Length: 475
Image (cartoon, rainbow, N blue to C red; front, side, top):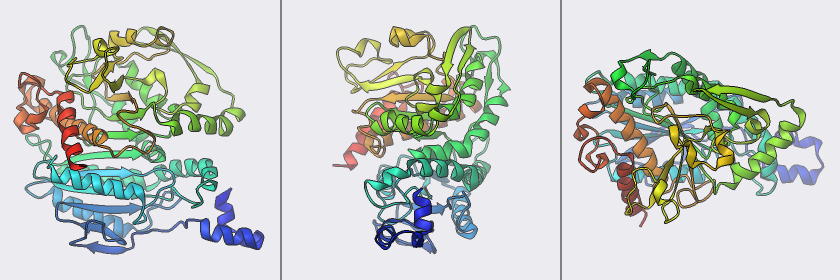
């Protein structure tokens, strides 16, 4: 509704027209200047590519219809990535897609937080000698600047997020993958690193852009030797990766949007232990925006006018009934049947259930994979889709200690989680050329991510180490 009010203010009374003139955010690009070097810490406000001493940040902006505002500016960013990727030290590229009520304006809080995360990551050298390049994907997540009235743009911005994803974002991500993967070799599969993040409606943009790509990779598996799978498998498969992973952070996108991908993965019996994760979903129970507000918005905007049906399914021999109403009104991260595990603050009540139990750890990870379904509340077990730890999708639910609210996605723990995801993907890539997980030299990845005995990759050790590193940067 407000899109039309902003577009046609002349049809409104003078007072309302004045109100909207002050309150509307135009569908324009903020980054219209060329490359800037020696940018201050606060950034170069209008540059499409900022070069800093320790990192770079590029901007690619899209219209409400999903078209890139300026192809030459996008190509300038891609040329810079390609040049760094071909250099002896390589590149580490982090793409971030913002969500609702945000854009690529210099003062945008998401942009400022993303910039700070890049600064901290560069300072502690999380990617070794690779050049760190952030790419901020901008779209008109904010159309109305008035604090209360902007909440009424929920339905319009949600639909726009889907359109933006179906537009040029897919091209951008596939071209980035090509530029970075071309320089990776069979003997050096991690010369370049590539991870993509989407927050809130930015998660909707990202999933809309990549769902068909991920579905294609999940369907077109290739067989590997049975020795790479857990015991009891009759067939062992693996997919091609997409970069070093895609991570949705408190995504504001309904579970139904990813059901087809989840079902394809759930019906595959055995993935190799060397299978890299295609997609991570990180959601917090403290996120009221997606757990309560989103559900109310979906009920009013979708469920009331829809004929929603129960879906009878069988996954790995287990009968499961899914309901389209729940798929439509719950976000991906809040939909319990998808859940892979729970990450909460360790205490005396949950310590026995913690995977890799360690009383010195602050974090407790409780797996719901395989026979660990029994750790779910009994009344919920029957609705859970069986999952295994080797699958290419991972749905992690956290508490307020990990992510305190909807927008708390740049804290030290989230940053450490992103780093651990990338390091684990690098380890999986190395294992594919080394003959298995036990053949990888952790010195080629990161010794901070080694298990207690010095062998094998430990996600928890990696996460704990980089949590401390990022927390130190914030003091």
